[in-house]
Length: 269
Image 1 (tube, helix red, strand yellow):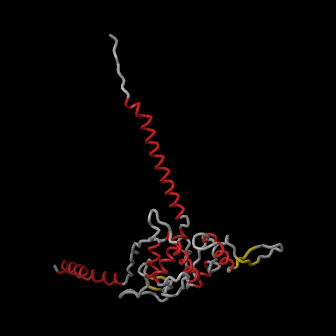
Image 2 (tube, rainbow, N blue to C red):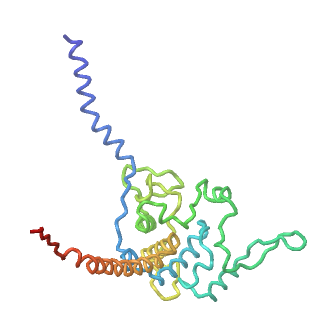
Image 3 (cartoon, rainbow, N blue to C red):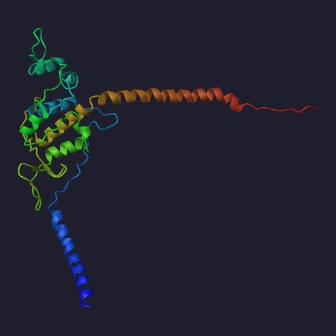
């Protein structure tokens, strides 16, 4: 009799303590937040990028992000007519030296940059990047908006979402708590603070403003053809709509006499 009661009592005790144990361990896991949807001005079907924001975003990238992150797929010439003039792009490119060659003697040499050169990398290779960042490899930002779920919403939320870990959540030394990063612990520290950049146009450089501008710049970097694609789509819509209306008119013009005619049969008497 007692042998039958003991297992039942053991199971009841385990079931009673199971929710408490689960709650205890669940509280130690970081909570991952879904980034909210923001009303980006370029998300509309007829909207284009804010080119002033692209220029400010490039300034944030150059003065803050470029210290660790590369932009391998963007050349200096891509900025011409988008955020900078040709003279400004040439001046910025010439500030960077690129290895070229070989010359007539077979030696490599350094030369000032040209608009056809691509953005310089902060590290010569991935191993050097990992060594300088405690083993973490800073991702290339050329396609970061397309490569992350949430796109610009995720990048903006990540840059503005640093906070102290909530109770019960432990973050390893050298990492930072961010509820929008998968796992909640990110190696990149907060880099955007009010006034860290001084905008050329006088826009107040708040944390949210800089995060918005650099997110817009990275959105353009991920899809430079965005404005041209929408312009071409509008042209195609107008042309195709005209062709559809013309085809409807031709169809009615050609088939109206055929559909409205009457055929009479007079049998012989």
